[in-house]
Image (tube, rainbow, N blue to C red; front, side, top):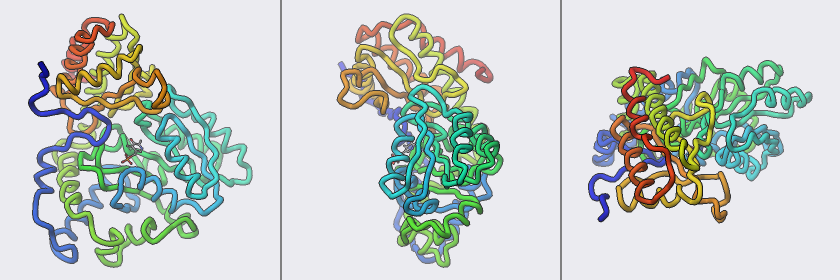
Length: 402
Ligand SMILES: *Cc1c(COP(=O)(O)O)cnc(C)c1O
């Protein structure tokens, strides 16, 4: 008999769990978009968006998903034929590169494969080889959600500086903002993109671009800009209507205002980061245990390079696909599909899945996912080491994970 009746749990890396408070904040009549509460609230949101990115930069808000945030950054950084260097550590790196190419940017890419972070030494060498400084910007994901690798943005910035290269550093933190530590000013990031439906716990529909003075200056001549994607009127609106190049995303803004309050004023940003690290460590401990007696492994071997928001794993012999189906059908838990590890039509497609632990997630939700997965492995006869859930519990019991 299915055991799935009850509150379902979506453990996929976006959309993440929406707090009831965020949904309630959105459940209201349409507001005036020309004067009143919305205008004041939006000013507060912009200031909170700076706080959540530890940034003193400019902020543009778009009505779009993360793919739109990619295009917004590209449109404002490049003219047709300009060169981008894209550091690829999974499917989302490929995606950003493909969007840039399709928009008319000349893309040079370095592919670091599916199990490793971007190597700063290779970035430095590529920039040193660019003696004419044709590369206008370096594009990289902080967390590539497909592989669950976490790139070291500080080390990549240092590599750009060591090469003495003027390229902008543009970072996709869509899967990491509000989960993994990110410090835009301290880390010397020029452009950062994020969206509403991951660590920020708001339904999909808002994208954000933070950009430095240096990036603003570069955008003045970027001929890929169009009226809708131009970040300047959005960041420096002459009237509220121009903030969003038209009608404001009213209800998303109410939700976002609430979620930023939860992150910044109630839990606290460093506590949010610590919670994600602790829960991620519990997930890793379970997989380490399960992997002792089965074809089960974490995609990223070194914990220092793992995302704190999502974990990509292999469960061989199609086990991942069968387990995902069991968890959803029988237990009410939806796990993420494997993405970009093998093609969708590969016979090995069913060997990969992802567990999300981003945003509005706590210890009991994480233990719930792990407990259901262990039950599913038993029900399906998937070989695994015993005691994954117990190992996760031991990690949760620590005051701080290692
Ligand atoms: C989810 C995600 C995207 C794409 O965002 P959408 O809202 O699905 O368009 C891009 N980059 C990363 C790292 C992501 O996690």
